[in-house]
Structures are given as C-alpha cells and as structure tokens.
Length: 335
View 1 (cartoon, rainbow, N blue to C red):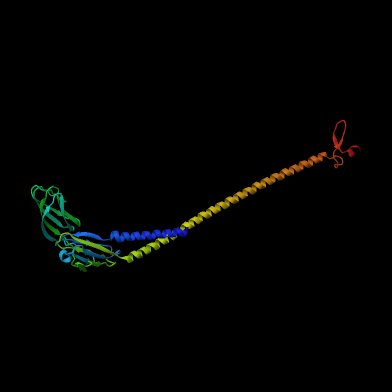
View 2: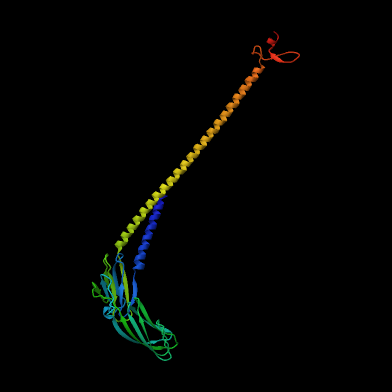
C-alpha cells in the first residue's frame, strides 16, 4: 500500500513539474508577434532568472535597410528623452471602399503627442477611435499620451459608396535614451535575427527601435534558461518528497498512538471483566458453602432428635402408653 502511494505521488509530482515548465516557457515567455510602427521605441523586459536571451526577427523580406529595425541591449532601464522628442509629419490620402476601414498603429511612450488633421469629401463620413465624425469639410484632433502602449488611428467608411479621406499626422514621440547601449543589432535579410543574451544577475533590458516605415511586423522570442528550470524542479521535487516522508512519519506515529490507546482500552476492559467474573464466582461459592453448612447442621440436629435419650445410640422406637411419646429405644424402655 505504501509503495503504491509513493509511486502515485511521484507520477503526480512529475506531471506537475512538466506542466509548470511548459506554462512558463510557452505562455509567459513564448513567441510574441507585434507591429512596430514608425518611430517605435519599445522597452522589452524579461526575468533573467528564467530567460537567457531575447531574439528579434523581422517578418518582412526587406530587412534592416527598409524597416530600420534595431535591437539595443542595456545593463539597466534607460530613461526617456522628454526634453528631446522625435517629431515628424506624415500625409496620407486614402480611398475607402464602401463599408470598410483603414488603420495605422503607433507605439507611443508616455509624454508623446499625436495630432491628426483630416479632410473628407462632401457627402461622406469619417469615424475613428478619437470620436470625431465629419460629414464633410475638415477637422483636427490632438491627443496627449499618458501611458506607453499601442495606439491605433482608424478611418472607417460606413456608407455604401467609396470615400476619399486626406490625413495629416504630426507626431511628437518620446524615445528611450539608447546612447549607453552595450549591444546594438539590425537584422539582415535572410538571417536568424538579432539575439541579446541576458546575464543571470542584473536588470538588463532590451529596446526595440524602428524607422519610419509603416506596419513592420516583428517577432520576439525568449530563450529559456533550462538549467534554472531543471535545478528548480529538482529542488522542488526533493522538498515535496521530504515533506511526504515527514507527513508519512507523523501520520504513522499518530496511527500508532491511536492503536496503543485502543489496545490499552481493550486490555483494561478485559481485566475488568475478569475481575467481575471472579467476584461473581466467589460470591456464588460462598453462598453455596453457607447453604451446605446450614443444611449439615440442620441434618445433625434432626438426627439427634431421633436417637434414644438414654443410650444415645439407637433410634427411638419405643412408645409409652397412654401418652404416646417416643423418647427411648426398645432396650432402654423395657428396663
């Protein structure tokens, strides 16, 4: 029974360790695909205890010359260049088919600003996440960024006819200071990408920077530090096994104490029963002896009444007339 329980415990422990490793390596630090918009400066962080390297690959075939992607590696989290933002303008003219939309994505850090001027032909409509609806003419919107994240500018045509929209973007983006980077790499066409190795001790981070090209698809992957997973799994397994042994000893001790208590109770009960039986047997014997002695004394007295009062040897078999008393034997009565 104990061997079966131990085997079951080991199997369950192994499954739990495998599942935890798979979740850590696949879910939390698996592959991530993102779109690097123009002027992107994205901070990439990972726990160096579980991740040994960060790899960046450009999903498009143009390579670094067209996309301007650069992966920087720094020994600490860099600061934002609030006082020297990157400013650029973009002009776009798009024709939206009926019931369709067009969107542009920008990764903007805290402190950035975006301004959009739009012009729509008469008789058409424009709707975007900034909640501006223009039936005709021109309009503008300015948005200050309070948190670093992806921001989408979307133009939708909800009518049943094509619509022409002219957009002018003016972006003031706050970038990370990468002047002290210890690693910088631009992925070349056909290469395996750029890999920045993280030391196990420290707060190293990576910064992904892009050029002014729209919608560059980037793939980020994290290399797991397997030695930490294996050592941690071994320590966890040993700890759980020791805990199992301690619990087994404690449970066995408790069971032994309960068994001893039950044995003591049973022995005490048996002793009490034996004493009770002995007492009952003794009382019965004394009763029998008293009855027997009483019967013997009564028999002796009865036998004495039947003997001759003169010789005390023979039975009384002589009667005196006319009273009818019998006190002597025949021999003593005839004397």
